[in-house]
Length: 273
Length: 311
Image 1 (cartoon, rainbow over the protein chains, first blue to last red):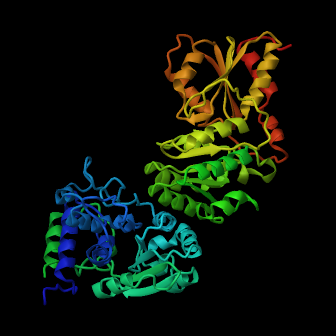
Image 2 (cartoon, chains in turn orange, yellow; image 1 turned 30 degrees about the vertical axis):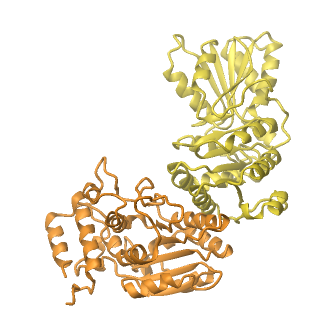
Image 3 (spheres, rainbow over the protein chains, first blue to last red; image 1 turned 180 degrees about the vertical axis):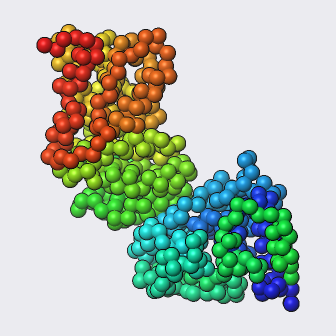
């Protein structure tokens, strides 16, 4: 198996997913599918692309990352813990009354730029940050990770027009295009297609990649801006719940408010190399 | 008042490079001098208010102080969630300047009447709400907004209003203004209702009734201490506001009165917009007359409260 599991994921991807499972398991609840679909996106950004200092989360020169689809937070939490922004023991207190980490990211968590959870907010906040870099002559980049269902929000397209107007080369909008939202497929609930053309039409340079292909993601991020003088949209074709055969494209795993010990055992087993 | 306010933003921006202006789709030539002299900190973002609040939040997270200006209803009604989450939850230094607070846009109909702005924003933690009475007061308050910690909503009136705020008092965010002393009744005002109430107090004086006036330019945080101190001196009070009586100034004061222990209950009336949509147009003055937000009604209400024959 070359150190990979049935889903073709490498040990880094599998290890982070096991951390996600244990995090959700400690609360017995959470959004597993939306976290599993963005693990490689977050891994490439934090392992290979972004500048940051875990010991100084507010370091001015850092690249900014906003998880606009805040419900995927478990994937971000395990990465931040893995990098040392806070102790891994915080993961065990997920959603506890006095825990640091709740069901959506909060700005007081070291490494989290903005509180998100209500969809449609992150892109505009990122645009403000990207404009600041230009205004203050700084060279950081801003990465905003959007959900596909989230792109039904009108505010996303208000922001898209603005990013284009300002020619924000330092802004990368990443879309987790797993083609499903809470109720069903995006094509049935509120069709996004022609999705890439929409982003192009709104003035973005667009790249489409397999959102679980580490090499493809790295190339897309490293080559941003995809078009000179324009913001970039990286549309990541992903599988919701990617990692275990029984969670992939299974709507039951979008959100669960009861995850049993047996579920946890099955998940951990599926995530072994 | 609006011109004074926007000119203040330009003055502040010249002195402090953290200050940024963001408009939506304001009138042609608005703040041309700002745009020409500091173009990198002047933004006109189009009819995209939800985006504008988020963008202002992002700029404020980086240490800037954005002043956002558009029509009050579009700032407050449409963007309520962005104000709650992007601005207030993060406690950011963004200033929202709302044009046409209250009934200013009377001829444009109910879509443009900002009657519940104060009521809804008052419920949000970290929010500060300013409603000045005249151009002089807005100039004083604008100076204070730069160093203020957290988001601020500034409710602008029509403009051209008579200057009625006194010069001899200290203007601080959160501090009420003792405009007039009187032992028979206290009239509590905000925004341009100070002018109405001064006329009412003069009319009452001619009938031998001494009405005091406490002006509230900061609805949140409310100067509770001063309100209780003044109320302890009078048997009755009236609140007068150019907005809904549900949740606004009148409600704020009612909450204080209900929980304070004055020994004797206070006689109390709230004057403002009742629980109804307006189906009239005309002018701001006509709508205010229709809702009884007038000097004559304030005076008459005072006389009835303290049981003095008006004849």
